[in-house]
Image (cartoon, rainbow over the protein chains, first blue to last red):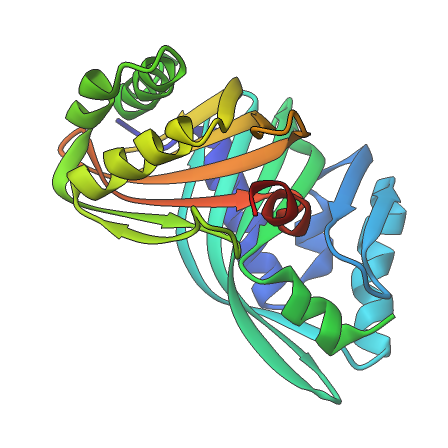
Length: 131
Length: 130
């Protein structure tokens, strides 16, 4: 079976994120999207609207926190959902953690309208980033 | 687009689990399946082989832990199926856990050879299961 168009769009958005190309990534996010960032740290919580979601990435970078997607293990998708299985690293001035993560995108008309993530060890991420 | 056969297989496995039909559930696993159950509770850990996986599910039921799943969606391709579910757990004391769970099923020739689950709040689930 051919890849679902939502899968291709999500791969492109993640690849853009990997290159720091937030503009291309943002093109895949609906204006009224909601981003649920798991955990209990300075950057967790719900972010509403494309501007706030993209702004979060910019502010994290300014604060010295970088995320790097090291591997896109696979992406599966249908008309309503896309799930990406990734290995990613979070680096702060205090150190770095690398984990497996599952990213869930709810999709409408080819754009992400809602995002959830589940990390392998949320406690380790919370401890690294701090509140 | 029609659903991928691996998504249908995982929906079937979850449906079999719900009615306690471990025979049908077992048919979805390869002999050498590896089952990763997250957390720090008595049912967590790494289970190798179909019998070990089914045995774990039997032990949970025997100790009065009831699990029901509501399937939100199952998304799949030839190698992976991901089930987005709502997990309801009740322990022998009647305490309830009600949260989202993501299940990643690694598939080979229509059967699951590796499984990972990620829970919304693992710490709460650990407390409830003990």
